[in-house]
Length: 284
Image 1: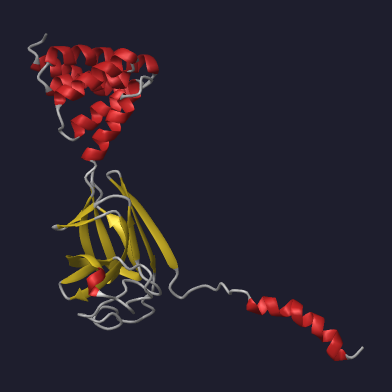
Image 2: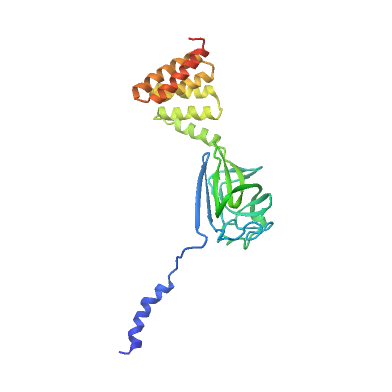
């Protein structure tokens, strides 16, 4: 048998190895950041280039030109619910994020075509929303970073940070209607427990949806199962309605229940409120 015949079977073993897909580290590695705002999940998938001694804005990333907002493929924002950004609305869905950095502010574009590689093939008619993002000074950042800062109940800042500056957008995802619908569904269940009613009471109070409605939920929670924390919640709602006598009485009971449960910190907090509401109620 010749050497040629001996090597032929080996070729079939080797060739698939060369034909298989290679996976190698990228100079600008991929990253994903996810944040819940209200009841909406927002996810950013992007690639992270580094400065490597290069000047960035006005140089590597020219001012006044469209940028892929990262490296490699498109930066993609996915949202499970509608987002209010500046004066515009971004419906639930997936969007490519393009930016046009300029001194003093960036233009941020949300485009429906998420299959592009960078800006190649970009079409303005596929834009869903375009907004202006102010910029501010930031700590030196070697690697391009997208994240969420300054979180509030239904609000957050979407921040694009690199070099010594960051552009930011305020995103609002109002969870009021979704929350009320969730409460309605949960409390329609005959097996709804004291925890569900307590959460409903807190939701109504936190969002100013109606203290009387919150009072009804809190009373139902305590009626189902009395705990020190839901008893005190009831007291707080009563106090907000000016019912200081009832609030003080429930605060005193909550204090006793907290002491019995070994939560001295809560008991001390409740005692302070008991004294406050007793004074406001004229000592009754």
